[in-house]
Length: 322
Image (cartoon, rainbow, N blue to C red):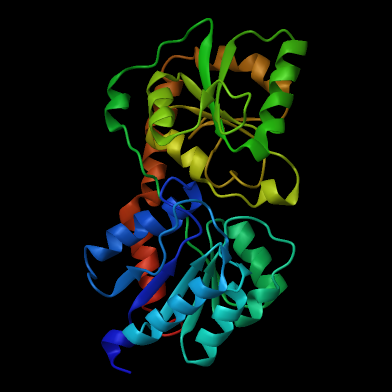
């Protein structure tokens, strides 16, 4: 096989660009990579909806496309059901390197025996996969896709009531509902929480346009964090989204954000609802929030698409993979 073919990469995403994990872990990095490696990287599948399962005919078509083009590495992004493990096994036996991208804690990973390397967007998840599968695993974070650097030109103004945005999947709905219930019970009325989600009870139905519109209107953002395994291994992408937009972020105390959101430095951290009752006083401290916003946006630069694509490029071109 020629070096050009050996170094070519094929991607199999689980969903369309509207599917957040596929957009952040395949489409955005791939778009950036293609600017420097046109022709050497390509999509092997472009689903119109989320589909983690491969059918027999679809898997066969991908197999023959990989062999026809001499693709050296195939990246599966959350596609592991149906005939996907069989396709991994066949490609591996034919000399193709198999990479699997996962962003959630998964109890069963039997297909890992067909995988040469895993990629995860958080260090904790990467460590979990590495230990449980004994397969080489690295962390490549999700990129920030929306920046609003001009937001720092407007100085922070304390208010009696703040518009607070929460963005999340319906699976995380209980976290924000529990928090809102506790705030009501303590009669904390400084925060009007606006939910953006695919949950039927959300204030705003989730879409990229809706998220961007609400970011431009928000005073603050909040991310309560659960203590279950799935929650503690999640990506930083929601926090970095707020940080890059210049929206001060409030996060629940958790190992997920301890290296990213430092209380009073790059954001605000709460342990209990009692901490939130005292937060308005801190928000009124002269100059504090403006310093936090500036430091948060600076820290978010590590998650730029240029840096993330660079990490992908280094990984995919390493001898261990290709």
